[in-house]
Length: 450
Length: 122
Image (cartoon, rainbow over all chains, first blue to last red; front, side, top):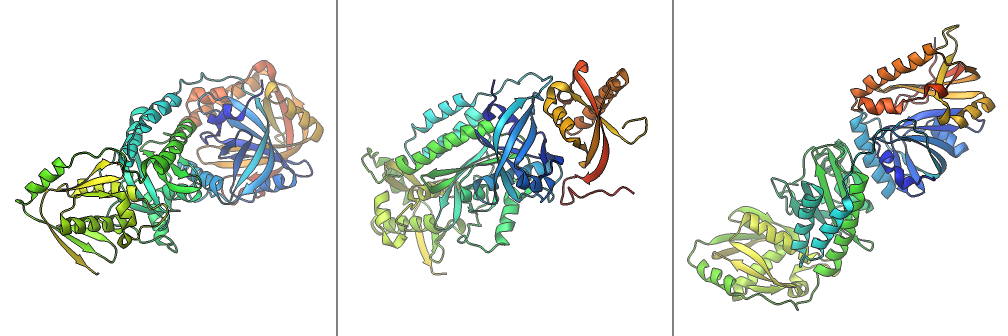
């Protein structure tokens, strides 16, 4: 029976070292260990090119190679006949392999030694089972049923807020993923901001990271899934931020008052870009304290979910329509009426960066800060409590970009920051593209230039 | 190591796993073998020629068993369970074949930029 590459994917996870044999143009053989044979597609694998060694010289002179890979659970061995095709030194495959290799290096205490120079892509000509004795195949989880259940819930979500909660809760319920978050992209500013998180002590809603740094930033930049099976320091948040601040900074000013919620030293990480067509929308990220937590099956499942999530974010949720029924205003008005008897809240706004402080405590800045200030101004001027996304889009003072303005995401961010920091002021959806401002105490507003 | 003159190295293969290799050895008379100590990552590659077939006797079978046990114990510390390593190294005694060669060159193969450099034996 012909063996297909998909059938031996457990062997291509970098869990057990492989060996590669090549020959030079005179037929002199060379054999060496290789830390990782990476699954590219049904017909191709890529090998890490780390040093200009004999294997490298040989495949350039004679592109035939033989690799033996080992199943990490059953000890089955497969011999692959390969033909060297090309080398990639940047882009999606390169970055995905580079991150994977960083994890493998950390596992073997080889940080700083293993360094990816290129992803050597080989066509797989033949696969031969050369096992003598194998262990039983372990009973595996079945991720497809989890995908089915999660997607059923996802497609029932009415708005961005519930969609994001639904996906992160679903990852916990159906995949046992304890820590996860969604960051959405501000492509104009070259950064991502946390809009939903689950499992962390500090929600980190509103925290930002630059596109291109760390596992999340890199998954966003090259728009590919990055999965790391071991603690890889160079992909941890702290290290990524050190790299960013030591770098010529392309991204706009980052939010530094809200801390990134993620684990300081994750054992396993997976970052999956969310997109719509070629447009980057954000990143779905999951992590675990333990190593080897996410398999290629989890990756396939999460990528499938992310494809649907991206489309739902782009097309279903953030519409300008206001056809959905509007909930009665009564509760909001009641709260508003009671508000007059209570102590006032001081809200200060700084025009320079759109930052907002409530009773001297930092709330938010940037686009979400500007939107909040605009809502409070309207409220102060004419007592308004109901607003529409459409009027905010048309409001020139907010200077929202014409394309992919992320307005719905900014409102989710603002709603969550208020819920955490100042529950006396709330934003409540009251229909598609419409929301109420609920103010439970009187406000004293003040704006400053600096 | 061939105990008669300590000049040659003998390797033992499962025939069913190595049919093409055995044909290639006959044709090319050239061989490369890699040896690694997993705990330290110290790795060497030996290239050789003058390939000769050998016999597999009880003494060699016993060596295969002992070496397998030692390797499995060494890998245990690196997180590979013993059943896994012994399955990986399993053989059918009846189909083992022995091949010896004369080492010609030794290369550093420990991970790092020096991998591939010739090792000069004093």
